[in-house]
Image 1 (cartoon, one colour):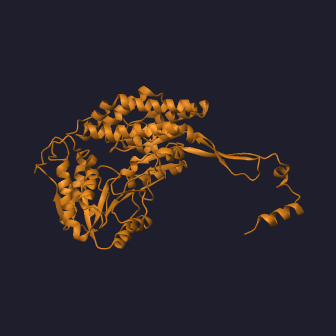
Image 2: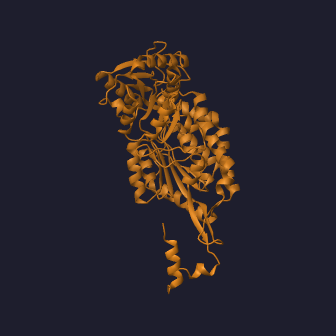
Image 3: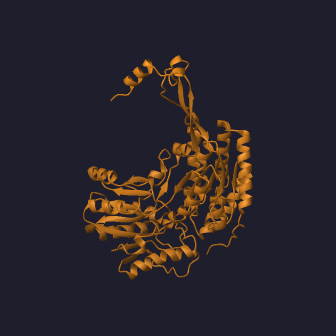
Amino acid sequence: MNTVTPIATDTSLDVMQALLGRQRASFLREGPPGIDTRIDRIDRVIALLVDHKDAIAAALSEDFGSRSVEASLLLDVFTCVGSLKYAKAHLAEWLKPEQHEALFPDAVAEVVYQPKGIVGILSPWNFPYQLALAPLAGILAAGNRAMIKPSEVTPASAALMAKLIAGAFDETEIAVVQGGPATGTAFTSLAFDHLIFTGGTAIAHHVMRAAAENLTPLTLELGGKSPVIIGRSADLADAARRIMTVKTLNAGQICLAPDYVYVPEESVEAFAGHAVAAVGAMYPALKENPDYTSIVNARHHARIQGLIDDARAKGARIVEINPAAENFSQQSAHRMPPTLILDPTEEMRVLQEEIFGPVLPVLPYRDIADVIDRINAKPRPLALYYFSQDQQEEARVLDNTTSGGVTVNDCMSHVTAEGLPFGGVGHSGMGAYHGKFGFLAFSHPRAVYHQSRMVEAEYMMRPPYGEAMRGFLAAAICK
């Protein structure tokens, strides 16, 4: 079971406001940092992750009850380091002012990217380091300071993060505040210059309301129900293997995890067979397998089990994938066997709520047009996954659906391309970051115009207006 790590005492609103005030005073006193300072800050985050990777993996395993060291190093350390190195490599290019056309030939019109100031990061528990520290790539590249509120659901990771950040940064550069929901609520009420929240859609409504009081710009990285479509031309075994790889990664506790899959009606049983085989090949046993992550706590385990029980009670066929036929009623963590839900119906909770666990509903279809209509009838997802060799059908699916991102013939791979934006749309989020998109999200594009020295530039708008102005307008306003 999870080792009991005390949750840090709630940080009061007054303490956080004072910290924000010190960060803002330092930011205003020092002005926009030069490129060397920005790179130094990025390098310090990289060093923090690299030098303490083993401690980070240990804290994550403590919080989850059991989490693969390799998965933690891959998903919470490697990914962060990659984002930070990408920003460092491209920073000089991003900082160059953008030149634009001006009305007069000797005028200069350009966009200069300014740091916004202080960015608040409200991060979740499923990837405590990746989703708290990877945004720093864009935030620090843009020249900002940051305050981080990590999730109280993973207290060991939060406590270690606070210690590591305090050891590498002055509190006026980056600071971590700890606490439970009360601290999180107070954190969203602070007058940040930008706030990024990663978490559930239900909580996002409250975050957005709180930010509105200060007119704080927001980036919302949410989740929702990301669909998978398997076309008739797809390699069914390959698709099942790739889907189950991501569905079992971190035990499905990923905002980008496939949430349900559309399979041609004649291939449902074959898909289920391939899915069972794929899980068995990856995890010959599950109950004490260090490669298979536990559900983070008993409450979340009960929530996911409730989705399965609801589907069973309403007539679904439940396929529990348990290769070694183990008894999960007594175990050292909260592991849950991957589970397929066959013959699901819309009144089942598993098709209404974000699953965030190793449970996969399988929906049969006859016509791809019906699949497109059913996806479009739901809130727009964070990701859409499509498996097929039919390029015309692929174009039809992609042209007629909307999602935050798309991966074709795999799941979640689009998020590994640092140059692509990561973000949702509608109920799955607002705004995007990663790569240059992160730099832009956390920068203010300031318009700077140097006026022409031509006499026409000065007198153009000054009355009295005469024939010259009327002639100019007559010539300029035309089709």
